[in-house]
Length: 219
Image 1 (cartoon, one colour):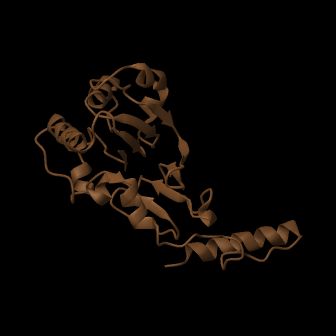
Image 2 (cartoon, one colour):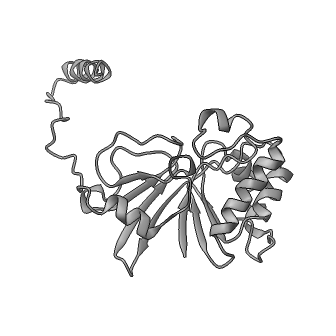
Image 3 (cartoon, one colour):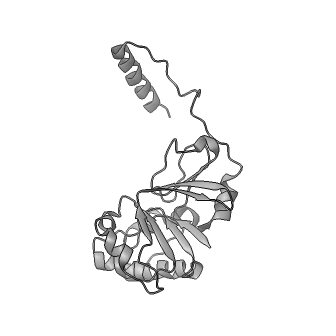
């Protein structure tokens, strides 16, 4: 099986205050981590594949991050988030160290991934942050992201936040297809967001500035 998730935020003591729907109060960070590990391993087996779209841990302790990852089942592919800098700096260590189930701590580490499944003819664009216009959005490519926890990006098209705090579970390809298959492909050419340009660069700059101000006045 293949699963998708994001923003587990292991070792984040305040996450339950920010995203309470699927988070329970805990006695200690260790207890919180143990519960998340249990939820992970109840779904994901050692032979399964997980694409995690960032922010694995809030910890600044490399040993603590390794301890958590060591207990997570599956071939774990990480799309780096804004709280994954320690993992990024020690990338080779995570890619070469073996965890309890025989897989590396992380099977891959990258900022961005374009993933195509020939069997289903789906192409997925994986990035930690929601993108307004992603590769292949006009062709029906799915864009999966995280970062915004229990919120949904106000972006049209086949885009989905796969974050744990929005769904309370790990998503399969079938789950993602059910969310996105009936949504429209999005093309940004010829849309109502285009501005009329002119060949005077200074007048053009004024038009751009006016458009930016108008855009940010919208409610």
